[in-house]
Length: 171
Image 1 (cartoon, rainbow, N blue to C red):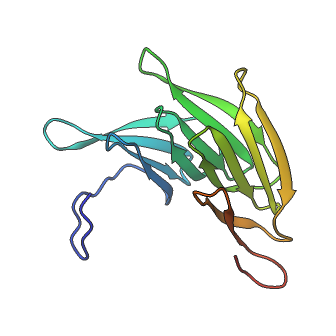
Image 2: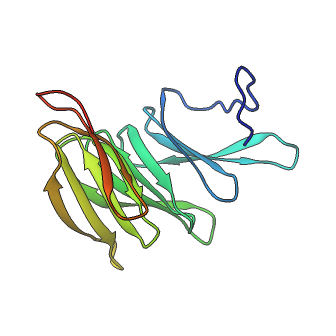
């Protein structure tokens, strides 16, 4: 995508509330999550217009998401849900619950090997794999006395974590 200042290349409209998460599949499809409780998968049609598939699942605002190379989407929600969206052979999208936590999921990152890292407002980071039966095998550790607000895994497997805490905000 061309990056320019003061020049909108495409404006995608459809969400009914704030867009809170974005990612892009390798094939150029754009994935957006919103406070309107939907995920939209945007693709460009032959006539250059953009069309959206609307994914509606459990009733909670989407707070974060990641588009995976295999076509799945992992998303976190306002009420602590972590979901995996998979497109079936018939073209329909299916949602499955990966985990549910007491506070909002604020960030999610899926590593190339399939490891899922989830940060949430409870100050915990959960790390696990998506099991063959859809379960999320995990370990967890406290990263902050406040919320984990952002995370990024570096190529050498170290983690950078953004937190809010009673004693101040930081990394």
